[in-house]
Image 1 (spheres, rainbow, N blue to C red):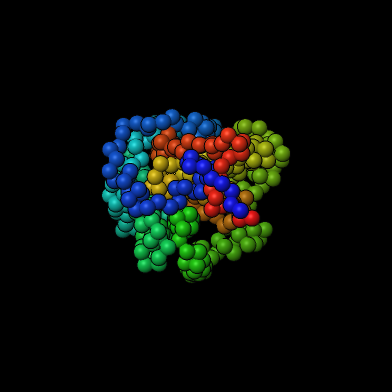
Image 2: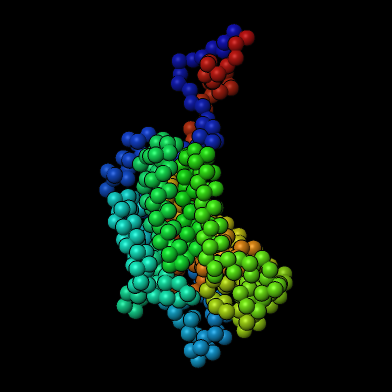
Length: 428
């Protein structure tokens, strides 16, 4: 016989998966109501994620210290001032933290209506780089000179693409499962940005853009077959871009046979690995590393190698854990975001931090061939640091407005055990 039920309404505990992924699917009406109709407030309605904020501040502060130890020798030889790069990094860090605070005070929903202007502006800057207006450095025209300021559009392209993907995925809802509406347009926009990066050339940023796109499409619920098919095509294009560009192919061969090219094309990654190896478990101590005498541009893309030498395996492990904490808090903000736009935006920005840190560390350890990607918040440079700090501010604003539905415990009847729905009870 069926269990008897009472006329009293019952509330069952929601399943864990449903609670965790409650932002993954919304109806179109609920999905667009908040971003389009809400009036953006001047400040977040809740309290900021102090763990996330402290993580960002710690990374920026650590970057200032390690940039100084990694650049003092080069600054002395080149500019006759051991604090040359330190002074600039302090200015960049101060502006970056100020940008983080400012971005955290602005309602992230404002970005909803600014999506296409931001995308168009960054696209125009990328075109300007390719058209010959870019400032060359290291064999690539990746910077634009705006007065005394040099900006790197490829760094801004990552954030702009994440914002647009979050906007588009939130707007299309269940239609993201279709190829013509939910998959192809995102691939076309990302492909256009990737081609502009490759023309600079900036192969590393193009790879990051592709990984961001596929990750966000996967999270949004795009069909796995589409993603796998596009991944195969993307890998084929990437292999062709390496094989048919002489300098890339030579760099790839040098990476494969590093011991044979440690005095020419593989000199930088070889010295980087030597830095990690000489650090041992606890390192030589801050400022006591010797690889700054041999490792070129140690304060930029290969700053992780100096961390490995001066702070050892323990220091590198703590740095990795810090990035893991940063990504985890970002994903937490995404899962608790009040709308799908905020959820996708937070997840995309968290992925951006994680992917860039992972690729940079892999390059420094010679697991991957050399790419021109900075270590987020740590490497020397104004463009990368400012863009990452603004992205962190957006993430903080989303976390401040995150909310969890209150847990309603199941009602207990006079007989003791919770009442259950008769439809869920097997018949005798």
